[in-house]
Length: 166
Image 1 (tube, helix red, strand yellow):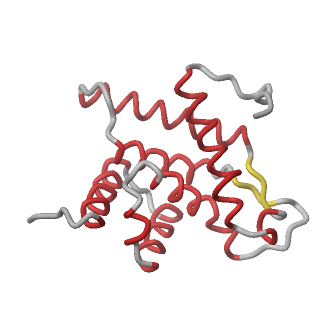
Image 2 (spheres, one colour):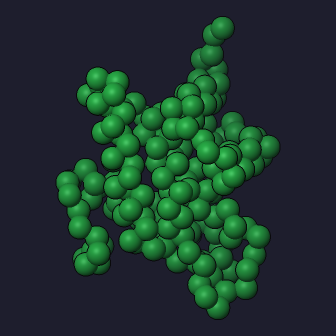
């Protein structure tokens, strides 16, 4: 990877690794799957991505202090990742691009993609289009709490591996 832009000052190794992981996910997997029509119309703002990563770590640290926990589980990591990517909206539309309605929720789609990377891969396979659209809508238009989203992700993962008992 090229050197980071001067606006991006990494505070810790964990912040740098998370930033690079999300950047790699966007470049190598998410945008590659969009097709040329979309990738020529979009770009990733590294500065906004870095802001999302910093906000993620700020919230995780606050949560761990509040809960008296040393670690945040993968469901909380996924939820906080999804929330902060969807709030900072690091995927931007090129000025000359013809607007497509898919662009309006592209950040939320990337947030879900990145967040679900923390969970069992079967979660993505078992998700219905209706539930996916509900997640997109919630991340776009609702003030979704991270802990509530973490609980939803926990239940999704348990349901996907057939491990829910009630």
